[in-house]
Image 1 (cartoon, rainbow, N blue to C red):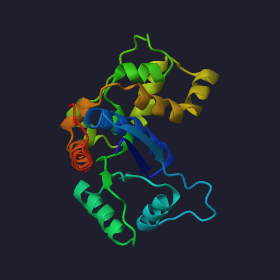
Image 2: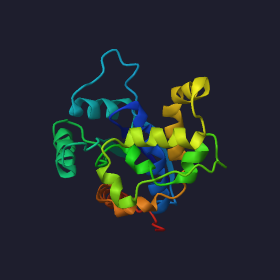
Image 3: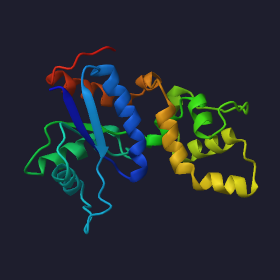
Image 4: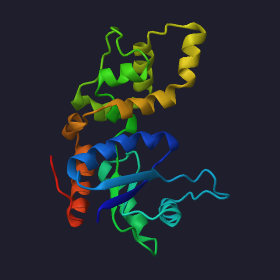
Length: 217
């Protein structure tokens, strides 16, 4: 197989921020393959699937993929329970994905983006800013109550905007800027200290091993 097609089935549209993370993992563990990915988009469907098993089945019907990434934030539920929930949903559908990988951040996707001040400054449009950004320590990432709010506040601090129409305009673009943080991060290896990320990486490595990818890291 010279090419790998994957689909990301995420909780919401903002979780497209996971794609740069997945592509980093592919680059580390499958550099010899051409990888093409897309997020499952139900926005144009006349009736959007609600149950997880229906969402999985719809995602598979919409687009062929070699690997289906299924994302659910753990939030107040144990990581293991979320993974079991995903696996049970897969068992309920008649046609299974070729391979499925669970993506379950302990809090929210945004927690995995709070690791690179330079990426945040660049996404904020102020790459040479000198305002001190207090990033959480890696071991704290899985305990932050609201990572989305923390990331938004860091972006606003990094921008240097202090008020008025300029800050209001900046807030309107905050979702796109958060996605740009994900794209700007060149090295996600810091996340390897987190149990949820370790689980994602190990599961993906197992899947890739079955399709003979050459690992570099």
